[in-house]
Length: 221
Image (cartoon, rainbow, N blue to C red):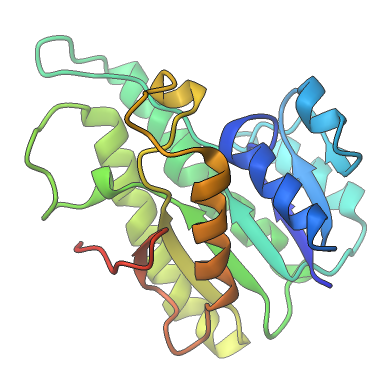
C-alpha cells in the first residue's frame, strides 16, 4: 500500500486519481484550494487552502504533513487559458507559467524531505507542450507553460536519480473535463486515470524522465 499525494484533487482527473487510488487501498492525500462535494464524499485525507504558486501555502502544507513519508506525488493542478496571437495577454501567460510549471517545481523541492529511494514524481503535462507535435499554433500561455513543465520534469529526473527517485512526464489524452469544456471527443477521466496509473506503476529509474501518453506511447519533445 502506497501513500500518494495529489494536487488539483478537487475535480476532474485529480478527483478520479483519488477515487481509483483509494479503491485499490492506497493512502491518499488530496491537495486543493477548495474541496468539492465529490472529493469530500470519498473520505480521503484532504489538505485544503493550498495555492501551489504560494511559497507560504506550500510551507504550511509541508508542516501539516509533519514528516509523512510519500511514495508518490502527482502534480495534477493546472489551468488552461486561451491566448491567441491576436489577443495576447501577458498576465494570462505569466499566470499559467506560475501554476503549470513553477508551482510543481517549487512543491517538488519542498516535499523532498518526505521522499525516499523508490519514491516517484508524476508531472501532468500535455502533448500541447511538445514542439514536434505543434501543428496548429495558438494557445501561447498553455503551450509555453507545458514546455517549461516538461523541461522541469526532465531536469528533475536527472537531479533526483542519485536519490533513487523516478520522474514521469505524462499526457492524459484528450479528457472530457471542465478544463476542456466537457468535449464529447474526449475520453472519460476514469479511462485516462487507468492508463496514467499504469505508467506510474511501471515507472523506474531506468525509464525516468520519459514523456508518455497515458496509453503508453512515448511522445516527441
